[in-house]
Length: 197
Image 1: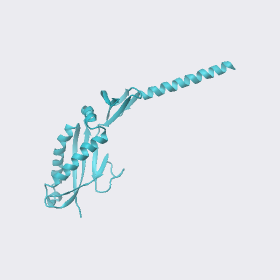
Image 2: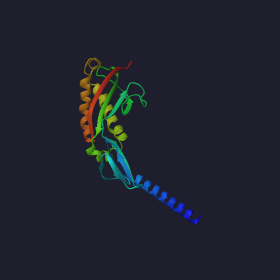
Image 3: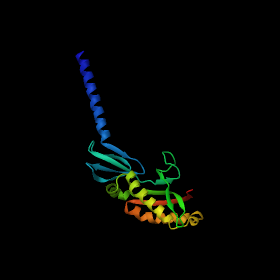
Image 4: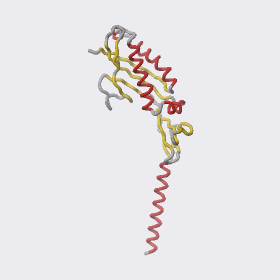
């Protein structure tokens, strides 16, 4: 009877130690998926180099993992109230209202496609923060400013009769250097105008 209790106790101890070892190993590893880059922070400071896709190690409890997508990301303004699932874009927002050169009120819908430069990920993290903060501080803020400003240089007739590509290119040309300065790559801007009645 004593022998069977001892064996049961040993087996129980082995199972507990095995589970604990697996838990420690699990909390000491993390994986980065394709199309992503991660950084490790320790007490708020970035440590080491950015982590490419694959399995990596970290100090449990002490290290935090912050992940950024390096794939193309889409920010889109919509003519209706944005909600999850409203479109296939990654970030949705309200359309921009402005006046044209001849005083017409218009609503501007546009899409910005961009990506985060994996070679500048540490700078992005230090100066802007997470992917969501990048979108809020740079993509949203600057694209809305320029979408509104550039439309004011055109008459409504010009905007409705074929200068949309020209306006899209102007916005792209304004955003590209701002994005580059902040560790982003501007890929494309699409622009659409509708009158406000």
